[in-house]
Image (cartoon, rainbow, N blue to C red; front, side, top):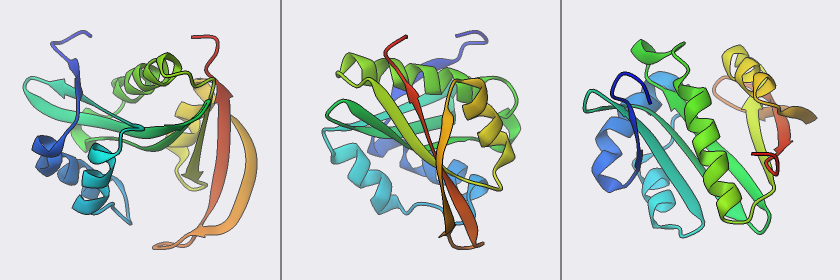
Length: 151
């Protein structure tokens, strides 16, 4: 990582920083309990990116057999458009591959253009649109996937 950034495994000690990023990133943020559940689940991968001693981005997902599901990825507002999301995604996919996963799935709001551009750029393809899948505000969900065999 350049500029002193480094990957860290996330845990309860990162909860305050995670919640700050979560609240500024999503209209329907996860609760502290949601994050604590992920930390306790042995199938979960919880990765953060620390820059100058501060958590600036995170990515969470879980493995189910040969499938890895990316559950959440966010970058704090001041640190966006610096490639952190791509780096975290690549790191998480590599970890999932090491656990035996060969495919990654995710769902994203149709209105989240930045995320859709990231996923398109990193090899994901749309599988399905779930009409009115999200609430607060109501939005379609796009289910996407990519192979992770080629990492």
